[in-house]
Image (cartoon, rainbow, N blue to C red):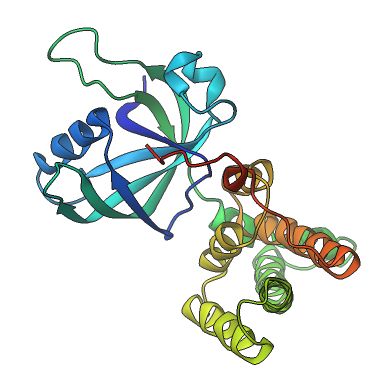
Length: 270
């Protein structure tokens, strides 16, 4: 048995550390916000965000089939009630989880009308991946166990730094290329904006990986795969490949991909 949390389906995944602004207008999700506000301030004021795999009205199909199985919690930071009963809220991505079961509410008066989910929490693999590092590159060079472990850790840190620089450079090129094709801002301003974004996660490879995953115009499937990846190193390797692919498309086709959500018409987020 896992923990049970409120569930909020969206058209795209949420990533740890990423800000999530929402306007809550459907009655069932107004109730969700009210229920969260009834809890003490702190981590308990969280709900699960999970991306929709198919369809738009999840309750009209089997929720477990309509939703991806890995999501991320959103911790309420600010809540602004509106005169019409709606809420404007801001959440921040918290912890990743895997769906074990989806519970459809509303059967009784006391039953919440929104979806809930039984989940298991997903751990990050930061320590394990750094300890493992690039030890396969050290095979054939005998050394005392402690020395070999230190060398492996040093190589891992070094290769991570190279990987971080590579992804950062690709992301800066990508942001500049997208801005140029969309004619939104001049190239120097786009480069400056990319630099500010990268500066906000400087020294934190994990935060960089989630920034790239959330900001790049990737498909829901690509973003979901990045969210499901538990190791920062592997996530950054995947993003390096994806950014190179997207840059090739941008430079070859001179067109910016449009996320499918933007083609869905004027649908609300809840």
